[in-house]
Length: 292
Image (cartoon, rainbow, N blue to C red):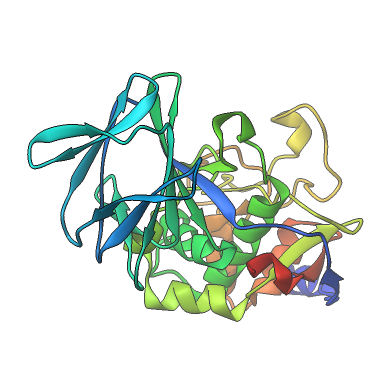
């Protein structure tokens, strides 16, 4: 009976979503007095105000950045040097990765001195961001269709929340407060494939990308958004979460990650899983110009 109920809701529509967008900005470090950064290959440190290269990082060498008055200082051979700017970007000269917090990241870094404290931001292509989210939010050993469902939900959440942290200079945090994001260090071959196989696909309701909330488990029944936040959203209804034997973990709104994995193990695909947890939604493919 449960299988029939799920299949009843499977109606998939492919459309093109045309809202102009840009690469996403993820806050990695905020309000810190210092940050240790590095690069796997040589990288340029660029003054964000003048767009002039002011220093070159050697590959596989750690460098400490500090807030110095209104500027940013870098430690080289035991001494600090004032970069004479409050805003830098760091880009690799060749294909490579940047590091902070003992993790590797794709894309490039933006660093600000904001009121005497450093903010380190990863500006990155959306799909590369999602590659770092899926294995951070869901165990890489889980079912492939659950990983695909997670990729679509995470992509939808990210796009629906662009600018959420604009007052801090970025879109989203790298923590579960928004979405857990471990950068390239978290990536796995199978979860990367799930991202690639769902590339550009998002969930929409009433022609708008939805913030596809999810949590680890709902304890047997998902919760309507109005019981957790201020408004009930029509696509976030209370449904059996297929995780009865697992203690509730998280807000319980939207997709249960354990429930998604259990359904995937029963043979349901990512699209069936998503249309079960998010009622009345359709699937859209975003404008590829997002990636330019």
